[in-house]
Image (cartoon, rainbow, N blue to C red; front, side):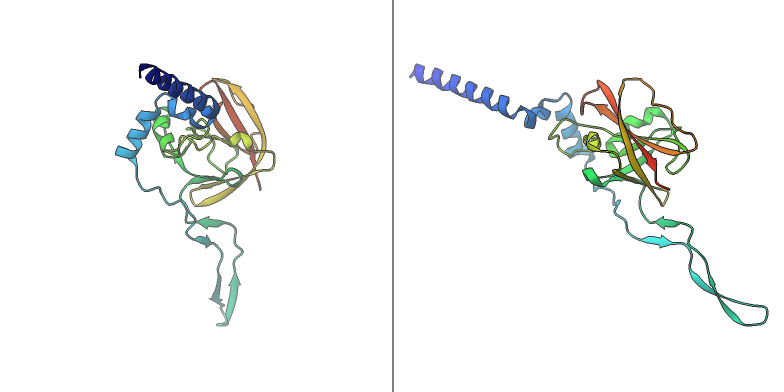
Amino acid sequence: MDFKKIFLKYFILFFLAVFLIFNWGRISWIFHPGYLSRVISFYLFEKKEKPNIEEKEKIELGKTGKIESIEGKTQELKVQPKEELFQKEDSVEIPKIGISAPLRKVEREQEIKKELDKGVVLWPGSALPGEKGQTIILGHSAPPNWPKIKYDWVFSKINLLQQGDLVIVYFKKKKHLYSVQRKIFLAKGEKLPTTDPQKSVLFLISCWPPGKDFKRIAVEAEKIE
């Protein structure tokens, strides 16, 4: 009887070891430091209805109206639309990797960590979307198969972006389109490369590899005029 118990014990341990070896890539996130506390915090205290960042309505500037001339004749006045406004929350969309996330704006670096749980964050002091200069947007990344709690996962796949891929930024009711140019890998603390100050350049930045704080990945994109 004791032999059977010992055999069963070692068989179970062997089975678990084999299971972990062959499925480590799928379940390794469970053992990630801080995972359990983030899950408990999210589901018990912080889970709320996600903000609606779907486009509700597009408002076009430039309507056809009528004016009355001095002679009393009614004439049609056509105003050419200069710009489109969108009834949509500030957000970032990356169609290729299925990303749609709120864009958070902070005033101080100390606020970034908290706001990253709610979306992606515009680096304080960088150019606003659409402006000339460098617009820097930060986002979390997570190990493979990490559950979609908070926005830990949002930039996990930006390494898949290639030249010509589209990044859409909605900011203050305006829509800005950017075309990916290249990917850059940086050491922690290393500065971004300089760019033409007369161009509107977007950098999407996250940790590399996903979920590890070893390096940084930066995806550079230029505004499509």
